[in-house]
Structure formats: C-alpha cells, structure tokens
Length: 240
Image 1: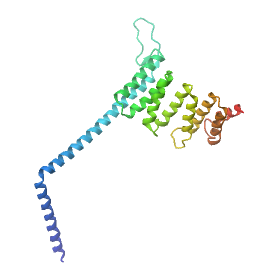
Image 2: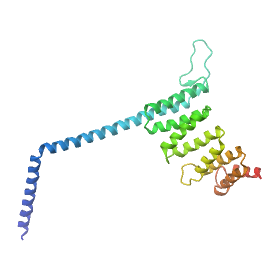
Image 3: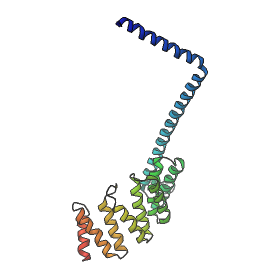
Image 4: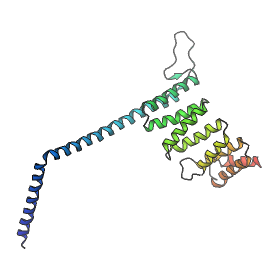
C-alpha cells in the first residue's frame, strides 16, 4: 500500500472515530453535562476545604504564638503609685501569668481542636499544669498528646512528660516503667542518654540502687561522649 493511501486511510479512521464520539456526546448531552457539573463541584469542594484548612492552621498557629508569648511575659510587681498601671504585657505575679497562660493554651485547643497547633498547645498546657502542682491533670493532658502524636516528636516528649508527672505524684514504679520503655527505643526522637539519666534518678528516688547503678553504667558505657557521661561516672563512684 502506498504511503498516500495509508495516510488517507488513517485520516478517514480519525474522522470516523471523531464523528462517533461527537454523536455519542450529542445523544448523551445531559448525562455528560451532569458528569462535568459533578466533577466541577467536587473540585470546588476539595479546593474550598483545602483553603479552609490552611486558614484554620494559620489562625491556630497565630493564636498558639500569642499563647507562647504570654508564657514568656515578664513579671513586674504592680506599681504602688495611685493611678499607675502595670506595663503592657507584664504580670504582677507568677501565679497571674500562669493562669493567663493556661487560659491561652485552652483557647487554642477549644477553637482549633483538630489542628497541630492544638496538640502543641496541649503539650505546653500539660507542662504548665505540672509546674502548678496539678499533677493528675497534667498526666491526663500528656497522655492525650501521646495518643494523638504517636511516633512524631510530641509523642515521646509527651511520654517523658507522663513519667515526670508520675514522679511528681510519687508513683516512681510507673515512672520507671515509662522511662525504661523510652530508653529502649533506639529509633526514638529523644536522646537515650538523657532518658537514662532520668531513669537513674527515678530509681535513686525509689531506693532502687541497683537499677540506678545499671542506668548510670549504660550512660558511661554506651554514650562516652555524652554531656551526661561525667555526671553518670561521678554517680557511679558515689554508689560504690
């Protein structure tokens, strides 16, 4: 077959196929328009949701930033002069600042509960509660962060917070279990040497000298270049 004939044949096949498609579209015009409309609606919904979610994240992040700034506010005793007011952004006492910080973190959690900012706010809220001696509440908040964060950064940080809350409550056995699990994770985001030191101190607090000695020994043997190595060695010497 000559090249010109093959060209005409392919051209005719293309025209026939095009005609069939156009005919099918014409016969099913309403159905095609419906499919197109649904597709456009889905695109609009998805795009709107992404835009809304990004906006939520931005607003939540801004509110979290304000809460963290409140936590860094200076303590300035109220002026004693008649009519004088405290400087903007300061608090008269640690207690007043702590109350404001707790309220600020709770606002992030309440307004934007499903955002990452809310998780971060909850972690810092737990720390504030722990500092205030509200140990049970702090542990509850740390546990919720640990459940939500999984293996991401705030997961192991929250589990360390749980151990600290357990220690503060005098529950050294539970704290030791939590810290032992964290120290066993070589792929975790927390420095194992630091966790071991916390475990050793917890063991000492509980009167378990052998467990403390074993934890200090791991720091010396496994992390000789650690910033904790010298302290761990001194502790070992004292425990001999």
